[in-house]
Image (cartoon, rainbow, N blue to C red; front, side, top):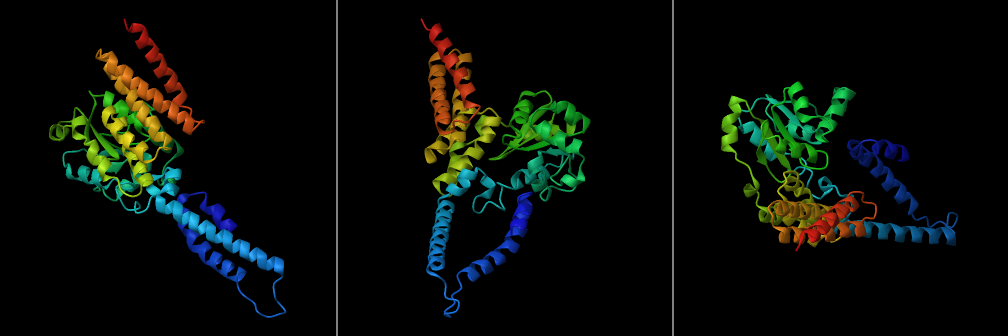
Length: 348
């Protein structure tokens, strides 16, 4: 069992084989441990009987605790992996079905497609065969250089236009998150070359400008903050409070990546209301408030800017209180306090 466990920890996809092999062995071992033997010859000692009782109690407590953590959603919340929540194995959380279906309906789109590394294989089954992916998660099929580039472009370590031009990519589908946030922001800024034509609660799609066949797609799919209904997204979260909070924290990656700060703030505010110890959502909320303050300052609305920056400071302080090891919040806190100081100096 130890050998199987070591193998299983090397790749997540090996956990299922481990479970099938280890579970019968574990059942047999546990049954053998607690098998009764009434013969006097093999009568267990008082110490052995006590050890079995203690083991039984520990096993029962462990099972009850695990069921409680899973039932309340705390198990999944502490893992911070939305794809491991109950019922999310075959859904848009894991598979970008809606986004891939949208692409398949756009007959004018050119077939060269880039999907971020982690979403690539999960998108394959929903895409028509005419669309070719730059890379998927079959790591044995690609060189180390190709795989490295697939990661680096998502993290904005490679210039996206140079990369997409060299590989003739004209359509980009990204699952919003830490591995793609910078790329999404850079594509949003690069309005002369790329245009946002689709987003949902987890995925965004950009297509290249300057291609005649893409013109109708761009005109038919105007995107902007007005297309995002934050209240509807919040209402769509299901499960326990902790499960809903984790879903909302994941959804917030989309408006935050697109710089729709007010929508992101609404979603994150609900997330921390449901799970007050969700320090990542507090950091997201502080980021939204800070940027809303920056926007107000650029418009000359110093009063609103100060209010937003104060809210941001409170969020960053909460992050530090919940997670002393966070490396982002202290720098953002210092910068926001600096902005507040400058605003105070500007007041008459």
